[in-house]
Length: 126
Image 1 (tube, one colour):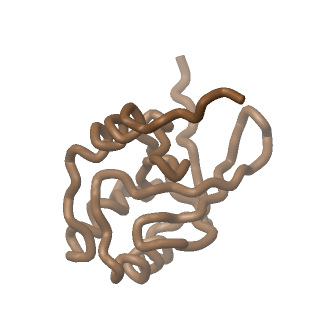
Image 2 (image 1 turned 60 degrees about the horizontal axis):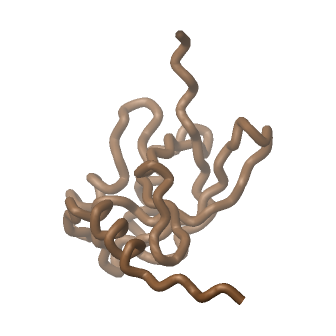
């Protein structure tokens, strides 16, 4: 069985210290889609915006980066939990931010997001 190509994304802009706006190539639709992604596994400080821009500028291969998602889980604001990786070296954005000191590790991020969604209230049907 052939290994599928990695899902690639292009960073459009950094909207918050922990959120990037992406353009993702969607093979099923044969067109790109736009989405917001929350960087998975770390809590970012205000200085992370510039660090994200610097990392993307260095590691983007023809404006493309590999998109790794946490099972397409979305947080309470609808942002996909994920990470961006260099296509060649595999270096991840979240690890870079922690290494630079502009983010702290958040190992239970996935479980905290699941618990937040489980405890949220659903509106009553109209």
